[in-house]
Amino acid sequence: MIHLSKKEAALKKKLDYHYKYFDYTQISPDPLEFPHRFKNYYDIEISAFISSIFAYGNVKQINNSLEKIHGVMGYQPYEFVKNYSYEEGIKQFQFVKHRFFSNHDIAKLFFALNFIYKNYNSLKYFFLLYYFDKDENLKDAISFFSRHFLEIISSNEGLTHGVKFMFSDPVNGSACKRMNLFLRWIVRKDQLDFGLWNEIHTSQLIIPVDTHVAKICKMIGLSSTKNVSWKMAEEITNKLKKFDPADPVKYDFAICHIGMRKLAF
Image (tube, rainbow, N blue to C red; front, side, top):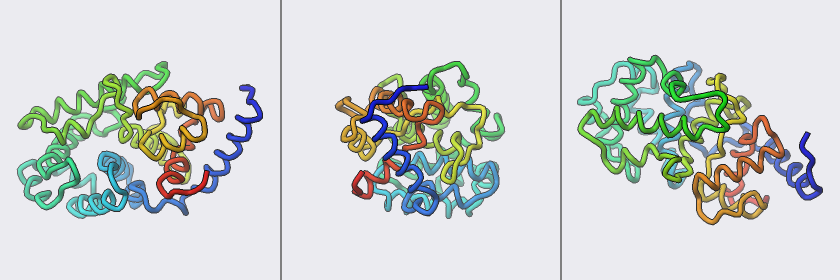
């Protein structure tokens, strides 16, 4: 059992309070709302993946873009991906853009998803190619997954800046916020997260760090790292392991939304 100082015990008490408060009734506004619309395993997996990739920028803008994309999918993500045609996709997504992502970038993303579901049956089996249960965290798995995903996309007219931005690499120092967010959603299990990939240990997850999470974590003493990076994400996660070694990332939603909504910690 890990011994906590008085200060650490007080922080754990606050974190546990916020974790319990930020349950499903507090989900909005968040891109996690979209996969919660579905019951089918594959629909949830695809919607969660797409929703995490677009989770950068203003949350209203994110949710507007995701509504458009789910609309193009006819609110049937798995059927859409299974029957996807890249040439049709360019037309289907012609009016969908999101910050750095053009309609061509989005069409290429779905081209790769179609390839993966045809050849590996699901994103989970594709990710598990690079996963080892003895790894301390998912750094290497994320790196190989992202590189292989980009290789699939590059087989179709090469890579653009937007497509490269979709798949950050922790080896290059990126915090990989969006990939860690997807993994949190799909590996953990509670009112918010789905627990679909139970082959992966929750203790291996890394907290998805954005400006909101970084700001709060610096304020409460969970990080002394200056810039948002993989180093910061590992530092915060390792400190959270003192409060819950098996599931340190459970505090992410609360920390993020306290920062996003400008609430008092």
